[in-house]
Image (cartoon, rainbow, N blue to C red; front, side, top):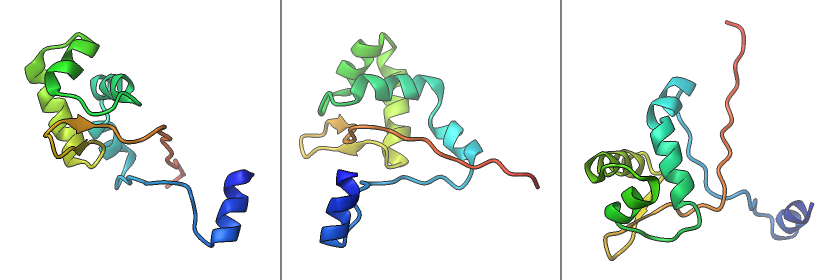
Length: 101
C-alpha cells in the first residue's frame, strides 16, 4: 500500500525495472536451471568476478562464464566499471500467461 501511496503522490510508478521475453519458451531458454541457481547466488551479493560466482555455485569457471555472458546479453546482469558482473535487483518475479489458442 505504501508503494501505491508513493506512486500516487509522485505520479511515478515505483515497480522497478522489468525484463520482458517474447515467449515463455524464450524465458526458459535464457533462465535455465543452472542460470537460476547462479542468480540466486548473486542476489544481493554485489559485483563479483566469474571466478567468485563459480566458487559460490560449485561449478566450472568456463561454464559459469558462458552462463553469465548469456545473462548479461539478456540484460539480467550488468557490468561494473571495474569489469565485474552484478545482479542489481532485490527480487525476481516471473510472470506469464497461458491461454487457450
